[in-house]
Image 1: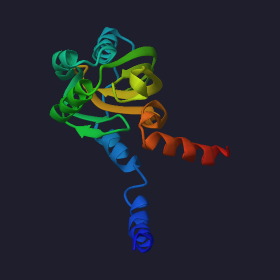
Image 2: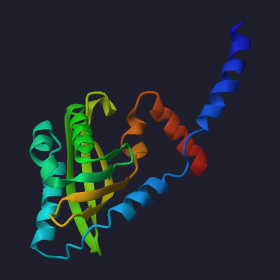
Image 3: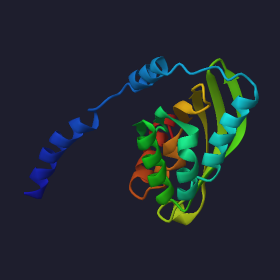
Image 4: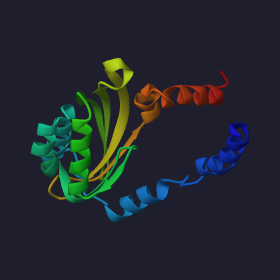
Amino acid sequence: MKILLLPFLLMFSLPGCSSGPTDFRADYAKALAERPGVSLGNNESAQRAVQRFAALYGDLSEENVKALARETYATDAWFNDTVATEVGIDAVEKYLLKTARGAEKVAARLEDVAVSGPDVYARWTMEIRTKNLAGGKPIITEGISQLRFDGEGRIILHQDFWNPAAGIYQHLPLLGPAIRFVNGLIVGK
């Protein structure tokens, strides 16, 4: 009976693996269009805005999120870190608090900042440490955040570009081996 049940389950579960969106650009394009941002240039207010971002993510602790999130993000901020998309400061702050509470340490160090019109690109190195990933050892990953600011120097758009599969997912007990297997298929190993 179990042998007959397996093909039946596979027949109905595998199509679910291909369902869902495959083009995530629409939300991003809409956020870009709705939040054109202001060009901060290379002046003191631009430096302060980037410093607030660096201070928040330099120590993504519960205390730091409570103290800095609302100074850093605008009321109608759009946020995507490739793991989640949040809209509005309440949702962004709630997500950051959940992230901070779920980890022993999340800290990003800014490596470089480039400005192009209203866009600020911040390249960072992040350290994540939790009890449940990588045996509690630090996970180090790199990425870039595209930021747009409002006239008050608060973030209205935050789009991260990084690889959570390499940074986090490959360290999950069941998902990690599957990701490494798929990566091997892609690169022909």
